[in-house]
Image (cartoon, rainbow, N blue to C red; front, side, top):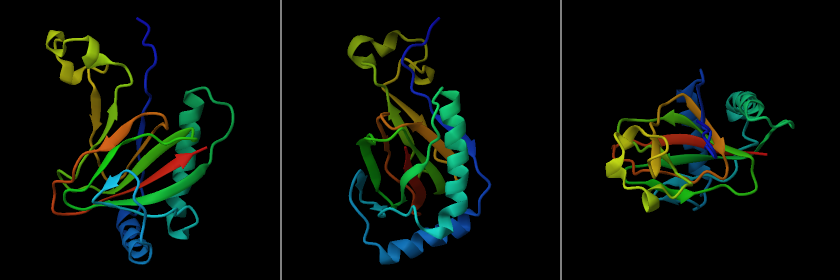
Length: 186
């Protein structure tokens, strides 16, 4: 079998002080009005790439982006172009979107209470348009027979994916904030 046109997603766990990162996120939120992009009801900061308190995280991200690009056969080194804080309170979500003019995008989860919303990736192939999913033995576990694939949000986890991959975040149904840092690499 040849699996054509897949969407690679890289996942690893980082060993960082998430409590300190959480406090830094809230400190920035107090002084930065933020922006509205894919967020509905949540907070997205302006670019935090020059914030020194996130330097250990950004250093780890670059290492893993290099691993990801090597595994995909890219030659040139990558760097972080921009990064921002996401704070999704109860009911907040992120609409489906892509990140243009970048090679990779990613997210690092700082705080993820139960039922805080998960990232999902949309299948770029027209699966439900062509196939009757009732004909698939277990379509919920099939990587090729789903319109969306959900990845659980877990504190300490770093996800990397191609910037062209359509993705979104489901609603935070908990009473606590979900906090993450998203970024783009060039």
